[in-house]
Image 1 (cartoon, rainbow, N blue to C red):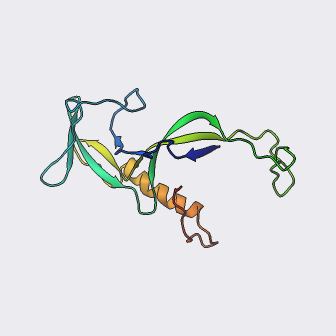
Image 2 (cartoon, one colour):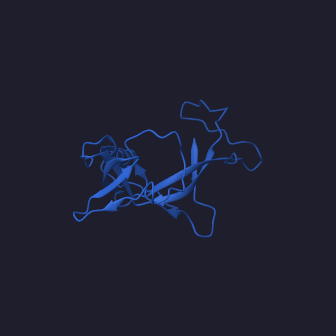
Image 3 (cartoon, rainbow, N blue to C red):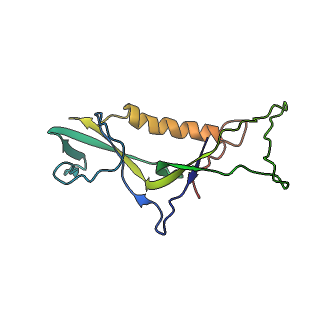
Length: 164
């Protein structure tokens, strides 16, 4: 299990715009990309265009839906302390049948490193359509999250957004 923790700085999380490229790069993390290698631009029609290693890419901007927040997380070595009762004993979480989770897995902390309001999905020589797996995935994830966090038996309750 994981717990989310806001960035531990006085300025909060940095703002970024993640880019999903149609290629595999064996690197995971930030890079100091110079304008020579990555310089996306908006054309006169408002379309994103960039060149990566000589290939023309066209981007589709996907906004994070209202009430949701996109975050970039970083794994840490920290874990949340186990909850104890008033006598210093670990609280035994038992389900309705009385079966407990005696060897509870530690809750690992994920730290927020950046936040975003939009993602750019790039395609080779054409703007990704609405049936693109990444574009469609955002919409399907939001519908799934709303169903998971609904408050009524009809599945149409309020959704909880990520927040402090």
